[in-house]
Structure formats: C-alpha cells, structure tokens
Length: 397
Image (tube, rainbow, N blue to C red; front, top):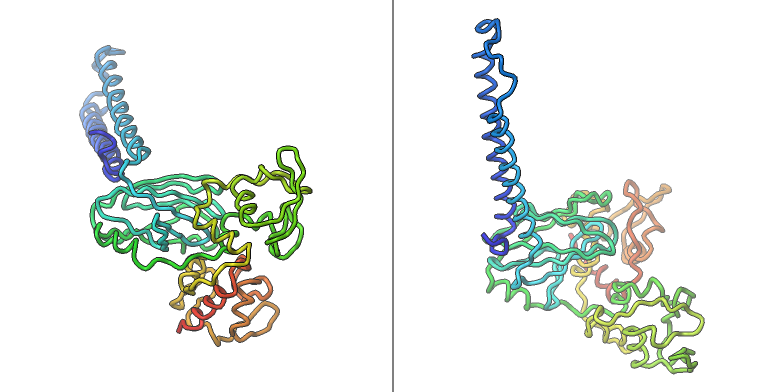
C-alpha cells in the first residue's frame, strides 16, 4: 500500500503487529523445540551421543537465511510506517499548537483558539508544534503519534481521526512540577459541525501590548522608558530619532510608516546607539497583528471586549490552577474570592481584587504557603484584561 494512503494508526499498527506476530511464532517454535530436545535427547534416553557430525551446511544456510528475511521484512514495515508519519497529506488542515508550563493552546486559520484540539472526522490534520518555555512532547496514543516540542524549534505531526469521540492528549516529556496536569483532549467531530465551530464565536481581538509580548518584542524594548537592547517603546509616537540609512545619517519623526518599516525590515534604518541585531518580522507577524501593534504604539488602540475565562485559558492559568477545588501546582480558583490565604512568613491575607491583581502581576511578592514560587509575572496584560480576569475569578463559586 502507498504510505501516503495509510493513516498513522495503520502505519504503526502494521509494523507492530508484524513484529509481534513473528515474535510470538519464534517464541512458540523455539520453546517447543527446546522442550522436545530436552525430552528426546535427555541423558537418561541417550547416555552416549549418537551423532558425530560437527556441522551441517544446509542447516546453517536455513537458520541464516530465514532470520535475515524476517529482519528485512521488519525493517520494511518500519520504513513504510516512518514514511507515513513523515509525509503529511496535501489535503491536511493546519492547526498551530503552543505548549507551555502546563497547558496547551491550539489556534486555527480562522483565528479561533481553544485549549482542546478540535478536528474534523475523516480529514487529515497537520499540527504545528512550538514551545514557549521548556521541552514538551505531543503524545496522542489513540493516533499513535508522539513528537518532541523543542524551544526555538518548529516541529510537525499529523493524524486523521476515523471516528467521532474524545481522545486523550498528553505531554510525554517531564516539564516541571505540573507535568502530570498537562492533559487535554482531541475532540473529533463531524466535518459540518467542525466548520461551524471553527468560524462561530470569534475570539476578541488580542491587544497590541499582548502581541508585543507574544512576538518577543518586550525582551529587547521596554515600555517604561528604561534602557534595554533596543530603544524604549514608551511615548514613541512622534519622537525624533536619528537613524542611518544606506550610509546616510537622518533624523526622522516616528510615524506609522516608520514603525512598520522598523518591524518588517529593521536593518534598513539603524537607530544610532543601538546594535543592528533585530531580526526582520516580514512574513512572521500577520497583517492583522501588525496593525494592532502599530495602533498600540501610536496610542490609538481601541479597547477590545475581553473574556476573563478565555484569558485564563490562553495565558495558561488553568494549567496550574483548577476551578473545581482539586489540588494542582497552584491554589484552586474555586471560591477564591474572599478566601483567607496563609502566606510565607506566617501572615494571612483575605483574597480581594487588589490581592488578585498583585498575585497576577507580581506573584513573587506574596508566596502562598505549601505552594512552590514558580508562577511567572503577567505584567504584559492590559488593565482591561487584568480586570476581566479578576472578575472571572470573583465569579467562581
């Protein structure tokens, strides 16, 4: 069968079943012959060896040829399966999967995102895998696929769901104390239902400030005026800046066109006093995201409607905090508002809006007793997003 016509399940199962079948046959054959020879040629029956032959050419040819054929057959099945796993079908739909400690996020071409992987039945799905922090692994045992997700490297995996259902999806690489909770599902649904789901209820537009963080801009540019690898982005609109373009020194006023050029092709105009190390983002940042970033930098970004629950999912909060009272890496969100919380140093705090805001933006300031201080600061969220997240937490009973 053409490897392209096989599913990942068929490819792996064919190789596994063939090797298992040969192994069982060899086990029974060798065990049976061993028992026969032990009985037939026991010392009681044959105190003196009868045969004086020290070799048999044809026997040696047989026991060399047959295992060689079997091993080559195993290799062929394995190679066919490997090709199937590597050759992604041309009609596969693409989903971007982002792994982080300790949650999954799946983004579709329509802009829809989810913490579960929704796929249409009978259609190949190509999953683009990226990690935001440490080494993870995409493992879907029902579809016989496992692929490491290496920070800074893009990897791929594909599969096809033949039947509707909910299938487990695990992280199969130890990624920290919350590794065991990094579990979600693959939801296989009919194609018509999938098409409706993927286009319905579009998520709110992500703010330009969040996009700056997602694309790594804030690693080199500050928002508070402090010095960094690149120029600060604080009050950048209309600022005069000295640049070098084609060997000529110019003074430019920062406007929308300049900001677009500096993002898409940063080496065209090098700002004086800063190293020319910024990579070009042409083809990396979608046009819609680029426009949101420019709006934010120029101060004209409109406040988009925000959903606190969606923010909690997208930012990975629910990978460490449960909403049902169960214990995870961090305290449960269930009935969190108004709860008395013990913190390191022997103090107690009543969970109110102010405390929730501090714990999100400066989690290291007050460490909850009996929980590891591993939560990162989420200071990239806008005030509207922080307030929406706090409102969501208030409503969890």
